[in-house]
Image (cartoon, rainbow, N blue to C red; front, side):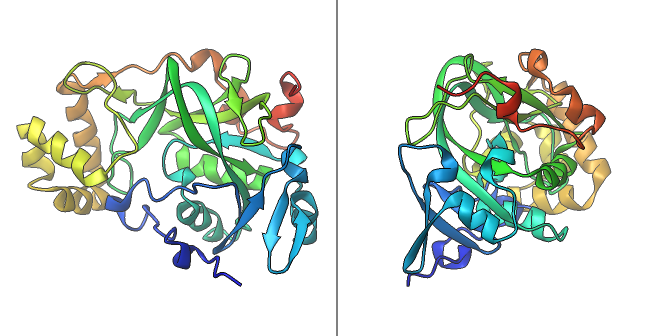
Length: 293
């Protein structure tokens, strides 16, 4: 049997621990994360819960496998689009496991329309500059969608707030196509409360790439950042990750350099229940959006 551990698959990077590895390595195939393993999903022309989990010599429907593990089935989970480290199985496993929450999460690359991936206008607690989505009606990209249960969603919320806010995107405005060809009715997405970093051309600076290259470019573009966090990316993440005041000053410099574009396009889709932490009766996204065709 093939070793499906995150370490064997090269997917065990944890950007929260190693900031220059941000955003980590995303899963590139439909998978079920189970702790420190990533099991393949056999895509069927059916809903997600009816896909099969490739495990040892036997196959099980995904919902059967989740039930067998004592976990919530797919129909009671919340699809969340990841544009940064939440697409990385290593980071997701770390976020959940350190809180004692089972890291059992279906993770599926989905073709999403209307979303671009940029860089947030702030420095994260780990010291890196994280990714953020922005609305770009002409864009189309394959992004990982994680299906979280309510406890997992709370845990991820706690790692994102207050720097990120959660929106709920309707599938009729932001097309989301599964590998099976099924269209999702909608999904959650986190977007930065600090705006999006602009590049030299005034448009959103592309995110999701090499963190060292990004930080080097920002240091090269701002003498004040070099003085504060330089001379190189390693120094940046070491100093910023250890000192909140430095992170706040660096974030302030982003604005003073005129690099920050406001994030307002997601506000019409803002999920107020996330802001108020009203989770007890929170339905899965699909229950409150138009049904999938």
